[in-house]
Amino acid sequence: MKNTIYLLLFFFLFFGVSGFAQEEKLDKYPEPIGGIEAIIKNIIYPASAKDAGVEGQVVVKAFVDKNGNVAKTEVLKSVNDDCDKAAMDAIKKTKFTPGIKDNKPVKAEVTIPIMFKLS
Image (cartoon, rainbow, N blue to C red):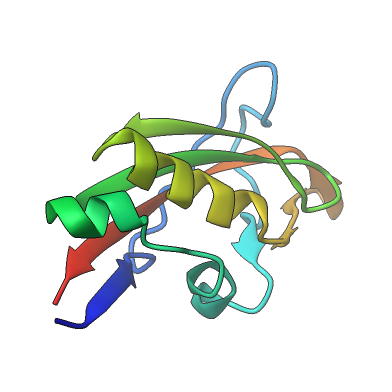
């Protein structure tokens, strides 16, 4: 059985958070440098999840700083601890373009759904 991971980036969700991101609408939201593949190459399907037949969608909120680095992640929707950690680790390893407001880089958030699916 081939194991695959699907990254559902066709509906990136963007929103601001008080204290980290700009509350007003950004001119440009953070995007992974290298596109979807940049995140996919960093995802490792946990062996424990494979062995247990665990599948599902992990939704991760990433806090991207002014330099495009992921400063922090938070799981919004969990599958299990191992898949959650794998999703967060992959996103933390990915460099992003920063959010842009008034032609200046700003802190911003992006919510990224990652689907773990055995096939």
